Amino acid sequence: MDALKARVIELADFVAGPYCGKLLADFGADVIKIEKPGRGDDARYIGPFKDDEPNPEASGTFLYLNTNKRSVELDIETAEGRATFLELIKTADVLIEDRMPGELAKLGLGYEDLHAVNPNLVVTSITPFGQVGPYKDFKAYHLNLYHASGQGYLLPMWAINLDVPPCQGPGYLGLFDGGMAGATATLAALFWRDAGGTGQHVDVSIHHAMMTLERSQLRRFIDDGVDPNRTGKGRLLESLVECKDGEFAVVILSSQQQWEGLWRAMGQPEWGAQPPFDTQKGRSDNYAELRKRLNDWSRTVSQDDLFHSIQREGSAAAPILTAEGVFKLEQFRQRGHFVTIEHPVAGALEYIAQPTRPSGVELAPKRPAPLLGQHTAEVLGELHASAN
Image 1 (spheres, rainbow, N blue to C red):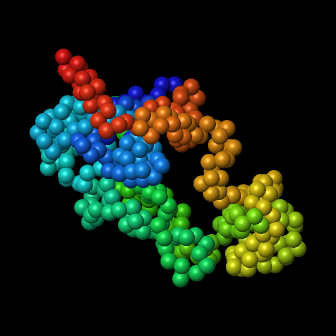
Image 2 (cartoon, helix red, strand yellow):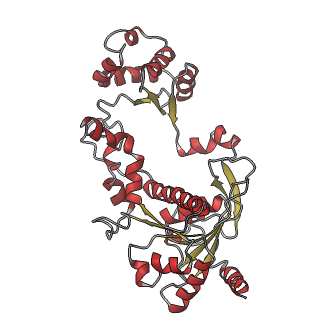
Image 3 (cartoon, rainbow, N blue to C red):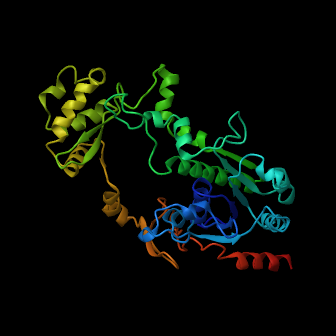
């Protein structure tokens, strides 16, 4: 099986667009990252930094998002820069860009302009609200998008009551959602093109991508007229419990079969086989009391014992792992989920590898994130050689 053989031009900063490019690069694409001369990607100035010393070549955010890419410094605001950019576009399969709608068109680099230069080009535009709609010109940060998608209203899940205000998801989770949606759509566009189609414009709304990933809860309003919220009231799907070692776990309650496995793991308490807890409806109607009884039991066992005892009974549970717990988890280690890459400034660091494992293809990152402009001469030299 061959890796993805495609040339990708990435004209994007921070998280969403670069994550889209990273996914394609990890699958084998030659991703050329266009960076602003002298400054580069904005992510270079976002921590965490190694040893807490700010350095645009040692930002953990940038290092993770840009493995396997080549960096070219190019100012597309100048006529010379735009001419060079168009020459690169002629050689490309994909352009990933995150400028606001219409911004590139003002520079003569809109989709129609690029399509005239390279009809087979797939242009993937990743913006806060997409290319159409009343919000298309609105700028937004992750905080805005997270709450506009409806996800923030559902967090923190299992809040005691609605006096606990909604909160934002961790890190830049929603921006990663947009990047993943962009990568998936880009691959689909490449498959369609290579099956006899042409290039096309892929419109990715980060807002839409985030909302789509929360559809399992938001759809309840459409299905049942129920407005789900972060308290979990009436949501007989799962429950957060605290264990005797102070750690937390989630137990699944979404079906009678799941309940029966959990009940056996608890030692078959009498109350679990008696009304109202012996039926799915009874457990749903008495969810608050059920949560209390589950916690009474969970506080008698460790997180590890709870997880394995429920799994042995054929039901589902999940430990709530800390960052340290994830890092040390043997399951990830056995799958080679962490790989060490040597960077000329940041040194040797462990990176998260691709979660997928296609047979016969090595997808682990091989090259560190580039230094600013590290490959300018190399890429432009290739361009000059191909022109001759």
